[in-house]
Every structure is written in C-alpha cells, then in structure tokens.
Length: 163
Image 1 (cartoon, rainbow, N blue to C red):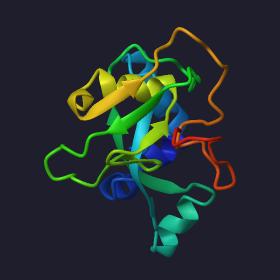
Image 2 (spheres, rainbow, N blue to C red):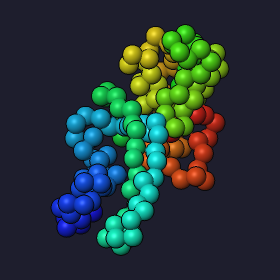
Image 3 (cartoon, rainbow, N blue to C red):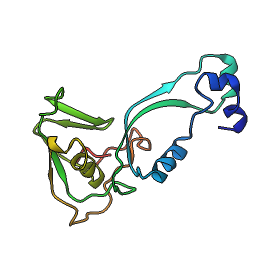
Image 4 (cartoon, rainbow, N blue to C red):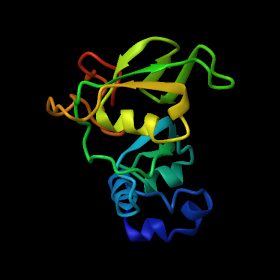
C-alpha cells in the first residue's frame, strides 16, 4: 500500500491502513525463523464505502488466520515419499483433523505429505496423534505444490494432500 494510504486516519481506523502485502508478511515470518506457514481461513474484506473504495482502488484486502511452526523447515515443499496416518485420538477431533485449508487428515487413513508437513506434525504438539511413515533419506524432488497463499484454484497436488 502506498504510504499515504497507510497514514490515512480513516483507513487506519477501519483496520485497513496497517495491512501488509502478503509477500512482505511471508518475508517477515522467514526473518523470524518461520519458513512455512499454513492458512486455516482466508476471508476477503469487502470495502463498502464509495469514498474508501475510490481511495483503495486496485487493492484487495483479506483477513488470514494462519498456523505457524517455528521449526527448521525448508522454503519449498520437498517430496521424501513420506506419509502420515492420523490416529483420531485428538480431543474434539475423533474423525478428522484439519491442519489448514488444504490438509484434512481422516482418522486411520494414510496420506502423502511433503517433508515440511511431516515435520510440522511430528515435531509439534500434534506429534502424538500422527504416525509418520518414511524419513528424509531419499529425496524425490519438489512436492508439486506451493504454500496455500500462492496456490491457484487450478493446481492440485499430485497423489497427496500436501500444500
């Protein structure tokens, strides 16, 4: 956003003046040691006021709810042939666990994942609810996916649930 919009008191009061460009947000997370984030929910913020619409022409605003893991993760999704099985034992989630907007783990169903997702599940508070199959000893190249914020509606992961 141009600085004059960031400094605009009305936009600031509407919680729009402090909005970050998504790539600046991603870079900020990287500088803090969070190399991969997961979007839980994303909602477009509609600007109804004609005056504000005119000021913000060409800018789309979104509200994101994200999940972060401060782990040693890779900057892209890599394929190590790993899969996970959710046990269904997490309190309040007996049938499925939703990690983010594109990872829905069904109890007792094996699902392919990238190395980052495997690490997020294994090395976090979620680890006791998942069985991780495989390790990072064999590399199969990039997992054909991207972070949810960059994923377009036409792209689907090949053979798995990842990114």
